[in-house]
Length: 312
Image 1 (cartoon, helix red, strand yellow):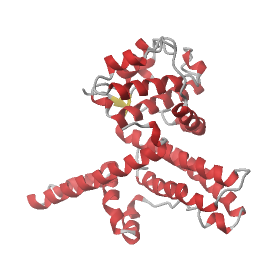
Image 2 (cartoon, helix red, strand yellow):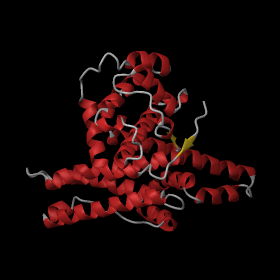
Image 3 (cartoon, helix red, strand yellow):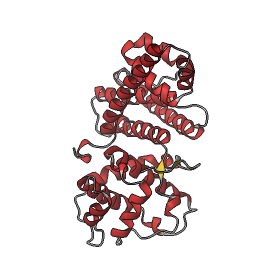
């Protein structure tokens, strides 16, 4: 089923309050409370998630619990800035979950949401403007949002370690700061052209991260030695830097550049001028690189949400 995708001018604005949204998302994972009988995710899943009723039911239950964190969202004041941010976050969350679990094969995001409205009348209700609030985010922007989410998820871990009243082991900074450093590089490679809003949010993250690094500096070398800095690379020299650092990293990075930057257009143009066997070789490299990128993305998704959140 073909679903229309888009992105809105304010779609990234929920990252202004991302720490709250991360906290809410983590909370619902551990919330074992039962839903009201009029929030019937079982009947919903039987009708709207036929390909995987177990996952459909779980996503529905988590969405209802997440929705309840925003009691004012049921008003029709969609022009309210905070309400818009709440809706944009819920839209991102639902897009991510359906994409992750491949339920999008049979349902567009808005159709999935409308199904929940019909079966979960205690919490949700038919909203006249929901078509403009819940929709399929285009793939490029969804991945950019995932990068930002991962960055802030790990930033929060660093902040907890550094600013916790109870001293923590400085070496525990290494893993989350490495994750931030690696994903920031990926984000920088995806920051070009029309993606000014994403670039703006990425810059905001960099500022916060660098301020946190200064706090780590004030605590001594044992902290800064385990706190990786962010590195800015221009798109034009990412490849050369990667080759110097690790030849193995070039293939997945090539996949990102091919798919998300104008470099892909250059390769397509040059490929048409090559003999058939050379052209096939380029296609094979591209397929391999994108596959490795997808595998890395799956690993990052497990980092983003607690692993118990996602059943097999």
